[in-house]
Amino acid sequence: MASISKLSIRGVRSFSPNDEEQVIGFCFPLTIIVGANGCGKTTIIESLKYAVTGSLPPGNKSGQSFVHDPNAVGQSNVKASIKLRFNNRGNNSMVVIRSMELTQKKTTMTFKQLDGILRTVDPTTGQRVSLSHKCTELDRQIPNLMGVSKPILEHVVFCHQEDSSWPLQEGAVLKKRFDDIFDSTKYAKALEAIKASRKDYASQVKDLKAELEGLKSHKHAANGFRNELEKCQDEISGVDDQINECVKIIAEEDAIIAEKRKILLDIQAFEAKLDDKSFELSREDAVLEKQKELLGDDVMEDKTTDELKEMLRDLDDKQGYQSARALQEKELQIQRIGRNLEVIRRAANDLNTRKGKLEAAKEAHAEVLRQRFKIMEQIHKKHQIDLMTQSQDVESHAMTQGTTATSMTLSTIFTSSTINGDDGTNISDEDVDAFLRALRHKEITLKNEWENAKRKHQKDEDDLQSEISELQAQKSAVENDRRRTEMTKNEAMRELSMVSGQMSSSLTRVRKSDVDEAKRHAAQLAATRDELNNNPRREDIAKEIRVQEEKLKSISAT
Image 1 (cartoon, rainbow, N blue to C red):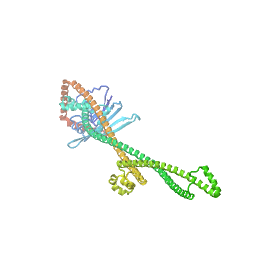
Image 2 (image 1 turned 120 degrees about the horizontal axis):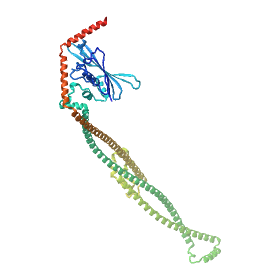
Image 3 (image 1 turned 180 degrees about the vertical axis):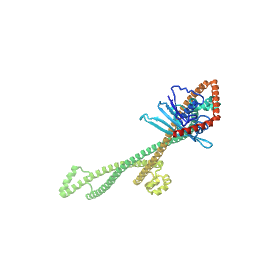
Image 4 (image 1 turned 30 degrees about the horizontal axis):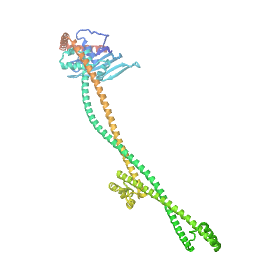
């Protein structure tokens, strides 16, 4: 708890600036000051008040009557000082020194407050520390060090006797005084600040709600874009599957075509061999007919083998060995030709059977080609495959892509199809390669568009997410401010309730008899002051004091 220990006064009111400092010690817990009128009891209270608050007594004309009159000491300049030793609320001893100066000019007097000094002891080193402060800084620091507000020190603890009747003043002045004592003005300002903050926050909440609605619409649009993106991704996946399936089918068909081509080459070689054999057979038949003509009638038709052998022996006997040998060779040649003819007939049957199978396979292959052409037509119509880019430059493609590729069909674009029919069975390998290249180009284009859309939607989503995060942070800040405001408001209301209770209890303690006694005492003091100020010997006394001081100086000099 803070307390005052000692007071030193010099040059204040009746305390001469030329004498030694007048030191007054204060006892704990109570000090009673007793003395005759005009001896300086009020000056002690005024000095205490000035030392701790920096406030001058009422009616002093800016401090001119608070300092010792220069005319009383015959000087043009009088300096006054007040020193107060006190214990702050931490029970640490401190000394405050306040100095004043009053200058007498020709017609006026000038009062000036000098810089004050606050002296204390450093707890770590034990040395004295003196700090010079301006008066306004000391006026703020001393009440804080003592733990008591400045209005309580001015109007309650060190209340001047001329101002002791302030509880009986008019309502507005009394309210202001109580507001200063109980710091209710600060709470009123806090309430006003709370109302203003609440209004501002309400406006911010309104704006944030409107912004939130806009962001909700953006989020809804972003969800639509995301769904559309997923749909595009599904379509691209379906197109990729179709492309892969078409590529697989084309590879299988290419393998089948290669096999069929090989079979066709075998058939063509076999047909060439068959033609050769047929030519040889016809030649052999001609030779055989010629031999038959040379032989004449065929005597062997009605003969058995034994008879023919017998005839052959007879013939050998008749015509000789050479004729028999020639006949035997002819028979062997006939048998060989018959066997070759049988082999050729069986080979012809096999070839006809194989030809039928190949024609069936060719028809099946043609059906597969037609199905492939239909799939290519469907892909072209569905995805607007641009085949013109495979035969034109990039610049011409840029000018005709929007019209030519979408209006033409595959049957009008493929040269082989337009020449050989539009059923899709005679599409050349170059046309198929061109379609595959266009399909891959379309796939790359769709993938690029998908990537661009994905990046755009991702960017939009990130922007929306960042805006939502900022709004959530602002909302949290507003909620925190609102909670702090509510807590401050509740605390202010509680303190206002306590202040109202204290005000009512203080007002009930002020009695009418005390007020009347204070008025009488104030009137007596005013009369004494007027009597002293109007005393005709006042100037004579000052002259006598100056004369005596001059004599004292002459004596000291001798």
